[in-house]
Length: 308
Image 1 (cartoon, rainbow, N blue to C red):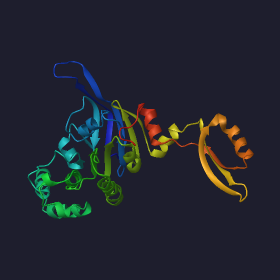
Image 2 (cartoon, rainbow, N blue to C red):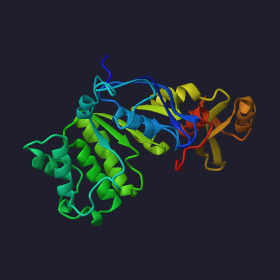
Image 3 (cartoon, one colour):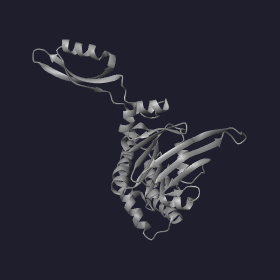
Image 4 (tube, rainbow, N blue to C red):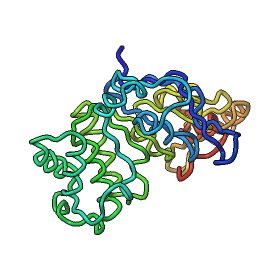
């Protein structure tokens, strides 16, 4: 299989200060294989190394060791080719000229990237998709955070890249704007246009809602990777049982209520006996399914920020 993003033992170290020889490891031998059409979510707490990885993949900084390929090209040896293969969606707060209109900003960045006679039509089409047409001719200084982030999405898509790299694209967005952009990524970018999306987040719900593949990063390392079902299978507790049972609420009318409860495995038989003594009946017994929060805790030893 041809992978659109591939990293091999990718490592990056930074000096702790200008005057210090001591270094800390931001990325520690990261290995990734991302196939075409994947919606890949990199989940990790702040400081895990997510943005450092994005900067290497987008040729903004160089790795200290290892290799990375984007669109089949080496990010160090063929950086110009790599930049033609991806679109970057980052924080829109500081990445536009605030005294230009949204349209003027997009025209400027499009001209820098790759002049195209159809650029105005592309801007109009993408603005319609993201419901920002009415605001394109307003100055960016008057935009809300959500509008600037939508503008960032458009800028990243203007040259029609097959790979979209997104670094915390929902930060500081209100729930309605966020829902709109999540739907746009899943239904339009990946679903209809068959793009490959690489997205970073520290939010569990975003990872769960979006990720076809989820990689968990902690202290610069990929601690686990797989689909949500695969991650749940690895962490499924063998000591907890989920039991569904009926409980008689009115002995005169024989009205029964269905209940579901998770209990320790060692208490299972005592609990069954109690249900039967109370006139209830066992409906289903199964192992409890791990939540993404439990998975996250297992592979990072911490809670995800803003996960609740």
